[in-house]
Amino acid sequence: MTDSTQTAVKALKDLDTSHVSDAMDRLGIAGQCLGTMPLDRTFRLAGPAFTVRYVPVSTDPGSVGDYIDDLDPGTVVVLDNAGRVDATVWGDLLTATAARRGIAGTVIDGVCRDSDRALELGYPVYSRGRWMRTGKDRVRVDGYQIPVTVGGVRVEPGDLLLGDADGVVAVPASRADEVIAAAQQIRDTEDRIRADVEQGATLTEARAKAGYHTLQTRRSDG
Image 1 (cartoon, helix red, strand yellow):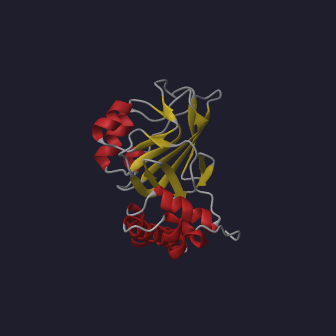
Image 2 (cartoon, rainbow, N blue to C red):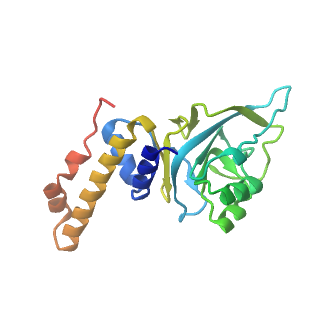
Image 3 (cartoon, rainbow, N blue to C red):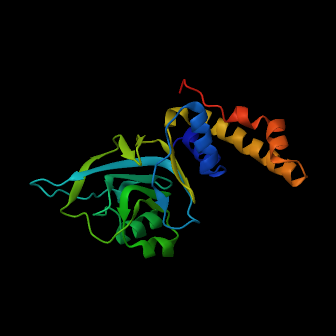
């Protein structure tokens, strides 16, 4: 992980997905991964994406993938299984290995299984749900470190993922600095509004004082 990526990941860890979502809306960037939620509300993840795309098997069953041993600590595994909920591409052994290697978490456009192991190890898994049926002989790896789609969002290798109790956002690596700066501004403004309300101001007064609605204005040049 480069120094700039480490700096960006550290900054993301101090933000919530709501801050980043609002920042991307403001900048005209689509990054909210629809329907991709944590197994546990306490889970959080942040890190650069390692991407894997799956396709249905044909005459050659292929492989569901042998990649986990090659990943660096802090990586987020991003699996595009086309939103399938009838066969999983992530389970017990991958969870145990990823947790041991210090992987930041896993984001799946599809389902996982062996969810109890992820909860036991505190390993963040974000998916469309959980179901036990294996993807073996049903799906195969189509490619590694290629553009994928998660919850309707394009994710490229090295893009930054942030996940919390409210879901996952994917930040394009090329725009990480401006997204983070906008998200920090939104967070700090909301903190000031909250403080004013706690001191007796109405929400309308506090928002007007902070220029909150201007912050939420969406740009069309993203």
